[in-house]
Image 1 (spheres, rainbow, N blue to C red):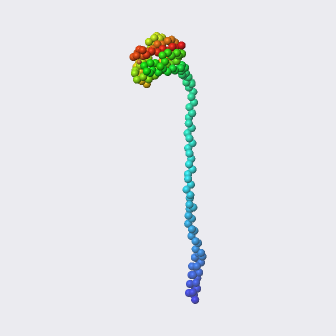
Image 2: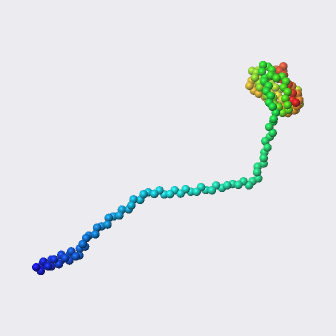
Image 3: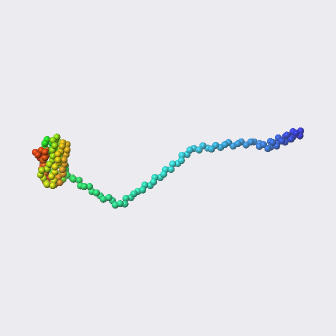
Length: 156
Ligand code: CU1
């Protein structure tokens, strides 16, 4: 009987020393999934553009050369003749000769204001020659290759 009591006491001591309920181990706390948050894009402010304030004096105004206001008169060279034998124009007008013959010709002044004599030299088919008449007077001209071809320009 004494043995039984000792055994019982030992059991009681053992039971008393054991924790009644083994505490459950805490579940590992998993970190909450972190959603990838895009980094805010901070755009750099544009560099201020330096404004150049012109302080230099304004450029001098260059006036365009006066454009001649004269008229243009066309004379055709064809069939071994000048299409208009006499042309009357005003000072500042321009006469344009167009060579439409297969045969070469010239427009050569033979008489007129001494300071305004001109010669087109040989004009081949399709070529043109022009002269602006700034000196009033009567200009006689011919083709130097065919002296019978004559013309006259009267500049008023
Ligand atoms: Cu000619």
